[in-house]
Length: 252
Image (cartoon, rainbow, N blue to C red; front, side, top):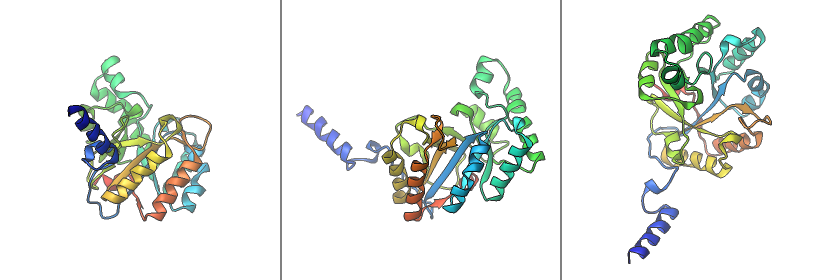
């Protein structure tokens, strides 16, 4: 009898009719316009600029989390300005892209040292050039609650990474969030197109907003999302009347 019950439970879980905890996509929300926050990380401004026409042609608005701005050339700074002027959000991803937990707990720096080096120094340079980030993404996704609280002095939200199979962590039910968990869509994530589209379908069905993370666009490296995958995402957003949100728009 017990064996039969377990088998029946498994079947119900697979078919998704028993309870939402069996599903890895679902979370109920109440966002008036369900949508997507598409984010790109690091210092890959040349690649992003080269793909700006693609984003513009399909009405895509993205959030670019910038690291290593202190190493940008003047030409790269101008490209980032163009990206911002096209309606995309310029956010912050640290000064030097250090692993923050290692910087404090292994290298024995204080949290104040961390903020001066990895937040204040980079923000000062960006502010000087007309960029005023209000949202933050952790390098390597390495974060904890202590850092979250301190970073809230500078930003409206922080974004970590969702390294689990619970994809519902990467949808938010409201536009009032302070900690976000982005779902990787690069080749390195090894996630299928079906998984990615299922998260968007969940956002549409449940009035939530999905959060995706990529790096390069359509390069040979593993930290790159293919053009084919992006086009599938963009088509789903358009065909299902989803809205593109910036990270700051869901961090009010």
